[in-house]
Length: 563
Image (cartoon, rainbow, N blue to C red; front, side, top):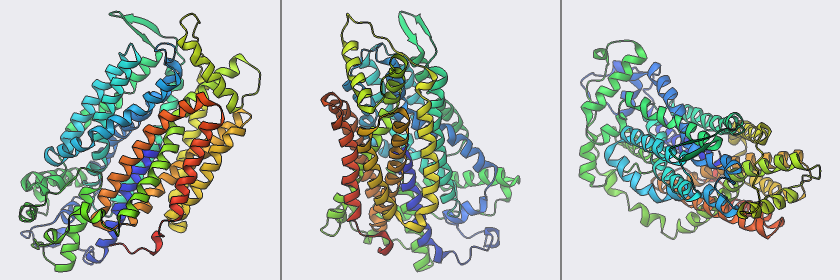
């Protein structure tokens, strides 16, 4: 959940910055769009405001729910099947770490390609194709008969899910005016949290079942059915988005104003119950001329790029009271050169390194918790001895030796209680996300981030002294919740430290580096487990301390003027 809320927060932060730049241009907001001259070309904000908020927006959010769930399931579902699949696929600890990390490898590999497709083919088409391809990858994963086949399927799943994951936020935001965008992003954040809770709930229902049958010489057991069921949200998303129009914002930036106007009319008709012909806007501004004159292609390769374009246009209108100023983009320096300048390169390095450490710890713990809780429950079934974390790790390492030895019988004990603790951890994370959202304005991003990382690091190391299942549950819940909160705050801090022209690239870079940290952490954790009890907990604790140290020496965002 941590990485998902992080990217959601990145979207919401940039939108708030955009709204701040737009406030002084909102003096006539009390006037209805129908009061303006009908023949005067309208910009995007005017056109979307005329559509109102109603049934179309609610239906869009309903369609977004399975889409959000699909993105969470793709990145986290493997962590729940590992305890059940270790005997069937002869998985050792390193195999489990690679399976946890390989989805992120696919996402990093395809980021640029999906960005190009989003620029040229549109948001809606990408969402439909991406979720359809994900269904195929999920089915291939459910049909896997070896760990290599499952690894390939999950890599391909991450490869194709990177596109819908990045574009979903953009698509949703482009159907709402600036007065609704922040609320919509908050709703999406809640959806991500709900999806994180749904995973262990579904695991409790399906994974303990004693299914075992063959079809065409392929064996199917409960964990494979669990994988297949987790593909249903992707299938629903693929079907539902077919009934929605292309993003009007994308259509305008591509010069397809007639199609954009038709999309606005559809929204207007559904929201108001009136005829499309009564829509008050008759013409839209031809932004394609501005783009051609500047010879600088508008990029939507990351979640935030479209919002940066909106902010630039609104700033032009406010400063010049005209939509015909074609010189703004000509005056913008090359973004990459500015980011590599002496003024920003050091700050950029610190921000990316901080995100690397935070997500290394957060996503390592998040994806290994189902395995640790399942091992804890299994050990309690066969022994009355102390269930300290060191005992559980030693048991997991010893069991790996049994899995690899063909002469020893491998037995998996999966009960509903194997995943009960995961539901508690997810619920605590959900509550923490809501609390942090209400406190962030009072305390500020940096303060919440430093406190959260310091506490999370202490919890990570404290796991070494955990002597019972209850203390393990409390400490891991605190670590996951505080790590998720800190990861969310780190994006807000990072974005506010840079001017508008650089924020899109910063979000892209920090999330890319953060995913690399997730990959490294999930591979190193099982290696450290084989060394002993102390190294894995020192790793998840120290990386949070390092992130805290970097956060403490960043400039305070409360004193930085947004540019």
